[in-house]
Amino acid sequence: TGNFAQNQTLYKKPLYNSATDFVPVALITEQAIVLVARKDFPANNLQEFVAYLKANQTKMQYGSPGAGAAPHLACALFNAAIGVNVTHVPYRGGALAMQDLVAGRIDYQCPINTAAISQIKSGSIKAIAVFSRERSSSLPAVATAREQGLENVEAPYWSAIFLPRGASTAIVQKLN
Image (tube, rainbow, N blue to C red; front, top):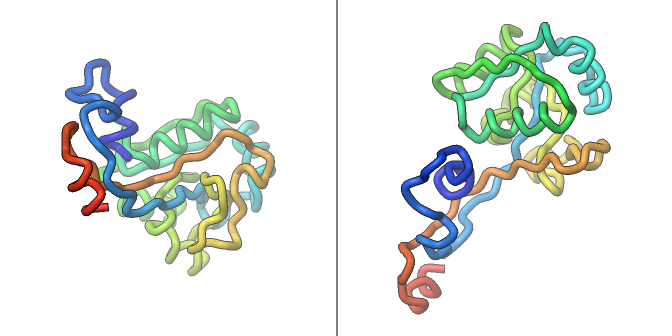
């Protein structure tokens, strides 16, 4: 996601054009990003979460594994969509951000679902919404943002195989 989608818009002059310099071969994985909050957050669904966030945005903080990472951009997209300005706390990795969320030192974050499943299932954090078109098969009880009334907040995280432009169709098809 980062190399072929996000970096194209994050840098003024990217070193390559992912749309024209490469040939897609296969999608390997697609994972949902999930909005999670500390376990004592006073909201249990997206509508309550948004209302609380709007009323308390100057006191709130959200974490990410680092500036420009997919979870950071997903939370930034969400914040922009609902019109809030919340302080971003970039960490040196997702584990450190999750550790502080579990401890209640930050209020929310938007990790890839696989990075949050065990904490959600143990009750050490609270899942609010999934930022994908459909519910995640690994978190089927968590409604999407769209289902909860927030359109246009989708942030899929994917991994794929690409080859350089000009790769033969036969090789692309065989690898696919």
